[in-house]
Every structure is written in structure tokens, then in C-alpha cells.
Image 1: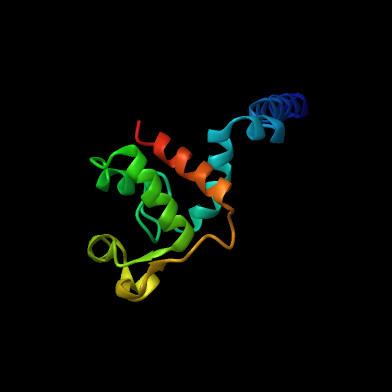
Image 2: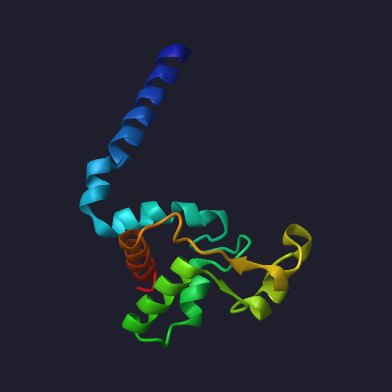
Length: 133
């Protein structure tokens, strides 16, 4: 009886997991989903809600909440493409454990252009801006 119950539970979990999984085709059809998938690489440093070793995406959006969306798109595109340094130093001093990462003054966002093309960066920025809403 225990084996049957275990098998039933595993079957339900497997079916649920499979039915909730997105296919590559579904992701390719939806630019926001595609941007979200591309941004997975960003999770080495950024999370949506919590601080990892850089500000969360929501913290970044909070800082720029009064910036018009078109301006923000250009700024985010530039930072993702070319990197940045010094914009978050003061914030990081109060939110990042320096023992984990070393000197916050030395931290920077490296250029992502070698990893993403312009269209992919645009998709990431468009997904990021959906977190504002």
C-alpha cells in the first residue's frame, strides 16, 4: 500500500511539473518571457526582490521610479550594454556585507555586450520594466 501511495504522489508531482513547464516555443513567442529567461544570467548578482551582491531589480526600479519609461529604457540599455561603476556605491555600503565581496568601491557592473546582442538587451530591459507594475 505504501508503494502504491508513493507511486501515486510521484505521478501527480511529475504531471504537475510537466504541465507547468514552458516550452521553448512558448518562450520564443512571448517577448517578455524571453527577456525574463535571458535575465537568468543576471541572477548571479541580482534577484527580483532581495539583495544578492548587487541591488535587487525592484530596488533599482524604486530608485528610478520618477524617470520616464523611454529615458529609463535608454539608461538601462546603456548600463547593461556598457556596464557602470559608482552609481550604487553609497547604497551598497549600507546593504552589502563587505566580507563577502571585498571593497564596495571596487565593485562595478561589467559590460554585458559580449554576452547579449542589442535585441536581447532590449528584451531584458522590457521584461525588467514589467516589474514596475
